[in-house]
Length: 536
Image (cartoon, rainbow, N blue to C red; front, side, top):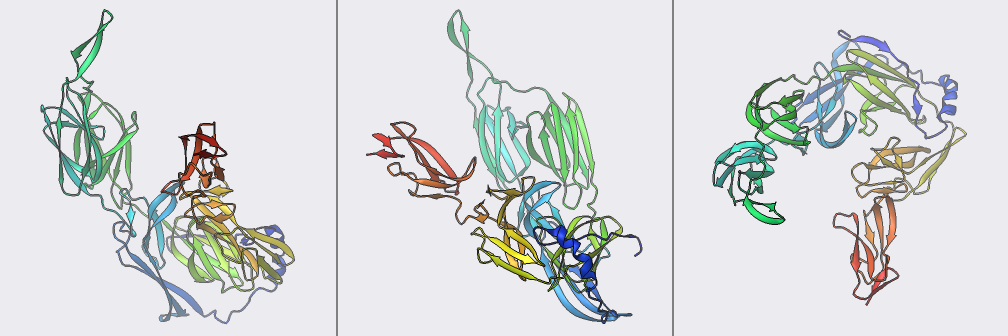
């Protein structure tokens, strides 16, 4: 293919049974003699076409990407028949981006240039993701007045100017406004900014007093709050303009967005980290120092995001196996059709390929796609001559811990239900909770033990089963006269905890919060405490 450097890597596939894979691979050569050699369809091929409703990588519009599969007669591209269509919608998902777990990221599907197949990227939305699209950041204004006037105004710990003052380009939501004037007490208030509206705030300042000691006595004198007087100017421009600016005071570890480019503002002296972001462009990041009474200029020349692609060719022995691909260990499997199959344009990165065929063990292989290169994956499948399987929890029961046990080609194997925590090195844990918590569910498929990986557990996971409730309390809440038992996730893991008496006058009462978390308070009894309950 023009523009691509072809190379082939014959990968040794992992047969998808949990254990003894090395012994199964040793039998692979025996199965080669029985490999499918049917070539009756050698004069036919498969072609794909890709189309998108939002015009490409538009992070702020939810789109639908359609892949159409055609059966094409050899030597006649026009003589083809539509076999199937697959549609995927842009979606808000949890994802691993640059090695970090990101909640509520955008998965943007698109058709790369000169391609016939769907690809996707993950994108971090600066203002959050909603219904398959990034939320557009909205802005409002804060009008600050004070009596007396000419007071210094800080918005989210950033100096904004002196009253009377209208602070423009403030993101919607809550902002902390601080008003300071020499000889007066600080005035602080949280205000809510609404889109395209001006929020007024008036600070009525009162004179400040300080106390100083004179000859062992205290005397009140008029004083002043400490007001920073060392400022510098910061000018930020970008090409193209209209980019969102994020400013982090490195010393205070405080981040805020003063608005969009072009910007000019007065800030405290110190070291700052600047991030300039615009949808469809690579973020511009720079660290600067602000000096007193000097102007620091920053110009961000933004570069368009480009998706570098390669080519992936998947073949299997026997052929006509169902092929699937996913972008990471917890990504969603996408169907590619029957082998042999070629993805002409696929975003560079690491992928996992799976091939399935009735009568054969599923085989998986991790591959890396490089820019402007063709990666060829040749997978030899292992024929199943003997297979039996039983599942102790009756199948895919996410709320009961079970083990799928079986014998495949004379080898014992099993798939046990286990809890997974994406933040842990090896993922496997006894219990977990929160958005990083998943289940590895073992079950029987075609008389073979297999896994359904990365099943989300909304209420947590314990001992190989998702929890139906995050927290339970046998006494129904904070009931000090009844000894209760709370079961849920504590700081040291998932367990049960009884109410108890730390002494004769108090009870340690455990309960479930409205958010489904565990809690505990020391409560004084009106009388005495015995066996985990107050005695009336």
